[in-house]
Image 1 (tube, rainbow, N blue to C red):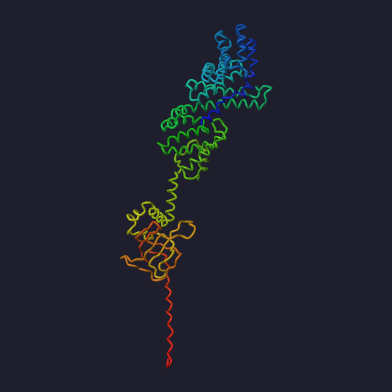
Image 2: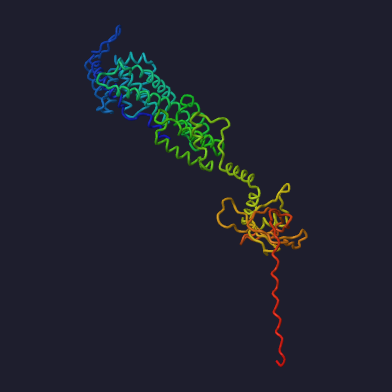
Length: 501
């Protein structure tokens, strides 16, 4: 998550500002050092005290250039402050301190140096810095430093407050600074527009990081602990009204929700919703995922959704729903894989009650404790359907013997089963008092029959359940008279012997 946050800080050199503000103000700074700047009406012109201050000031200007030395920059500023603690250029020197600390990657000191200036508000900044470019630069760097400290988790309340003020002032001032009529002649319209976008993105990015800081700072203590995640969640929720369309915020909320599922299983549902929202929001905006990040989380969402639900049915609908609101509806629920399987099982039982009954019986018999199940739950128990219905249904495979059968072999094929079904039930035709009761004719095989019976025997290898029943407990038998036996052939009479033989 943090790598996506860092892209919003703007840690690289200020490219657009280098064109628009920094280099554009160097000449003016030099002129100020020479005390040549023309003051506004009624305002005393700033002036160096002597040539010593003039020389130091010009060294600072050189240090502030892209080719300057960051360490020398601070040294020259300290020299200036020690030798000339009181100066007409106090605010400008403070602005340069902000720039120097930023160049030395000391965001905390940079922000501290900016605090007094920012507290003066936009009018005070304009008055103290004289140059709109300096104002823009100061606010940009302070905003960037605050974002860096927030992401790093080290920001103090004062630093966050200063950074928040700087970001708001920057957002407001940029609209005036980058007005079309202020565009320098050597700057193209595209460059001017790019500068405005960079500044506005930084202002919004800083505000976003500050909004996330309460939750992120809590989470940093123990990001895998459910109680810590619950506390962090409350912090992230406070940022939601300000950034409801943020994909990054949705991801952060999803992660702390998922972290809590061991104590609150319902949080897994919320996490799925929030990941779906994160991957359904626009990319490339402040607070949004980039395209690569969105794909990463989209793949992750599909994986955990499929694990949770059993398949990806409904995932597209979830994304469409999540895109419309940062919070799931009150009755939001995604069926677990077990719930899906149970629902399918109940539907199967409703549509195929006899087959479902047999599958349950066979499953128990085929289990390692199958023989015990048979002895305890099936043997000599009358197995009949409810309300006059027959308990089981199958295909009559063969009769033994073919005429006046004493046994019927029955298969119960599964839906869409391929090949010839294998008989798994033997129906022994018996009277209620246990005497054989063979059929009175020949039964047609290959058709469907329904039956009740009393289990009498069971073998696992080969699998066979033997049940005692009689004709009255079987529906679907088609019996025809047995063919009469062929008449026995008479032997030819013996030839009479002739006399004398």
